[in-house]
Image (cartoon, rainbow, N blue to C red; front, side):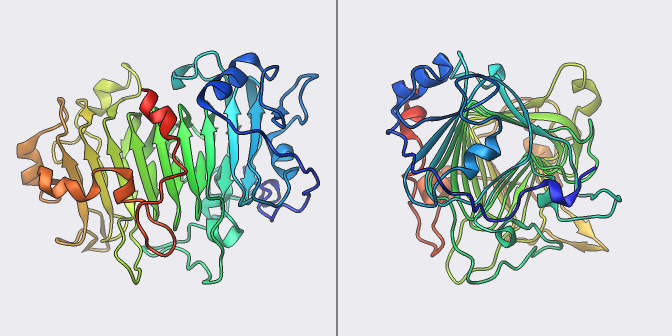
Length: 396
């Protein structure tokens, strides 16, 4: 079980290398990934069990980076890295996984893995963040999930962290248990902007956590879990990806809204994706059992748009979350919605009878219809999406 000393959640102090990586383009990135480090831009840091590697672990490579705004590129050679990784650096970071199939997340050859849940070595409960395979946040306080419907109150003077964090072709696996046994993060991402391209995220409960002021974009990735496995306070956009159902419990999404002095669109948006049983053996046992989500608090916002739903989905779509007799769904505040969803899991009659799912018309979807309309900076300004790798997205 997890020992608190195992997760390096202190600020990174060993900042000695002046290395600055040359700018990555679409072609130079793929060439670097497929060559195994022999044809990478100058300044690329290589990690792995090889004579050409600069470091054997991902954390050592991260810790070596100077505390400045110079971009850094790190190539992870093919293999499995059993470690917890903590990233507090504000300067741009790109992690590349070695691969010969850069457009297929199912064929990734690099895995970051750890086995932990929200329990310490004595079995006592700790904050969910301590279970994470990777944490991206400027401080420990910024990364703490907290309890209840409002979570941890992040101190007002907490800075914003990394404004351009990118990962390509890396899998994140929390192997604590082969079923839902408490929160077990594959990734914890708060107060930062990050894009994940052709990546995999595997756990059972609370797989992906996007914390307060977190902005995360997932493209052609695989996200797998069983219970509330896409959750948080921030904003996530999942584009053209696979949502794999490894079981049913709670909901696929469980978002906590946050009160702000400005209009916000914190929530999770899943577009042009698929929601399917993880494999054919589990499909019969979860038929009609998986809810699209449930509200962690009344400000939950999630939308499944133009996405295929297999027969695993509950006919009602979403469900309410009732605690001590009090429903968390609040009509007019909670938004649990679908737009042009299709497949055997979409049951319009069931949605109406369930009473908590909103089926959006085009005009109602329009305010959320692209990332620039929902991603916002810490001041609440919309439209800051320069950190998304649009070259990859537009390449199809």
